[in-house]
Image 1: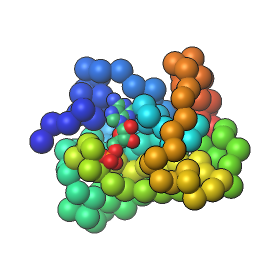
Image 2: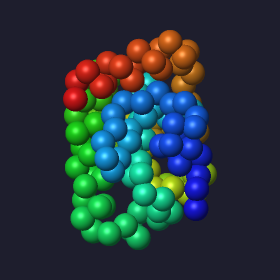
Image 3: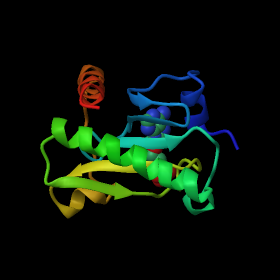
Length: 129
Ligand code: AMP
């Protein structure tokens, strides 16, 4: 079913894009747990991650790993946390979250960044790819 991410993929609504190829797109989460919180999304509309074809799923993980490696070069952190939820947006996405402590993964502690900061972050992560 089309989701808000479908609109982003189609370019109908804007995002702070980090990377895109034929099958996947990565952009900054609009309500980040931490600076640099990025979503890696398959272009195919699938609700649940483990319903993905195995190769497609593994390609998503490969794409996410590449983004995570670039992300940790830009945002100082202990590590990149990974989460898959999908309760708010039922279109598969991998959350990549620069974390230093457990609360960074709780989705209850949010950070505010300006549009300029988001734009600059997305650009700098993209440059590390
Ligand atoms: P969940 O479906 O529970 O994994 O959460 C969906 C995530 O998508 C949340 O972290 C939202 O902040 C994020 N989100 C929702 N709409 C947008 C958007 N238009 N651009 C970027 N991130 C979004």
